[in-house]
Length: 60
Length: 153
Image (cartoon, rainbow over all chains, first blue to last red; front, side, top):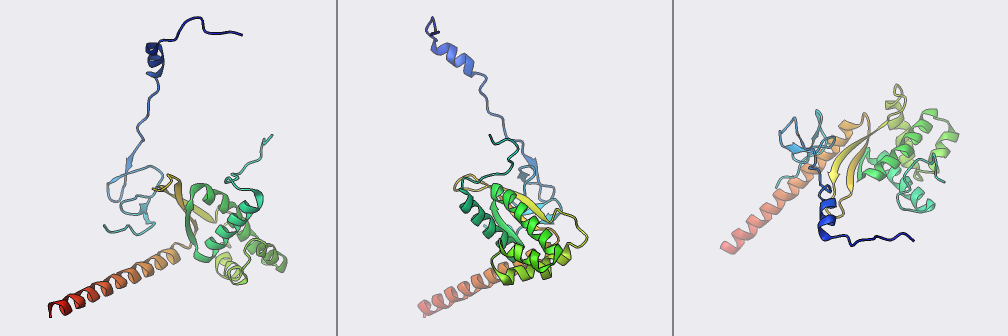
């Protein structure tokens, strides 16, 4: 059976993993209250989705 | 192979899944809007739309077909008498899903599943709820004030 000929150093492993990166989530902003908001979701701050109030936000 | 077998099994066996979808469907017809996970909303909307299509037929046979899923005669009556007339001019697309983001406990995507055209009913209900809450709060405040007055005496 085929087996590795040489030991794989920690450095090689690390070099391979340099391409494992996380993408930042694309955050939009709410047209109603201008707070940051995830795209295609109701605004958690003001409860609006597009032009319509979807839920009444909690006061805190 | 599961080629072309669309749909989410929701991690349940057939009977459990059918029961879940039936209860979600009943809740949508009764309350016009429900909050559930995105996956369940997407599966349930298929059933809800099918029920409304049955409702449009309006026959006794269609009503009995609906009763297989919504096992409550009163709720089926609201489907036939309140909901279906609203959709006379609409061919499909009776439901709307509004994504809400992720739930804190388990990170599940949550969404509203609502009947298109019943937004006013929903907001009216919500407002009534909020008012009730505010009243409860005021009462609590009054009671607290009374107690304070008593202790001051």
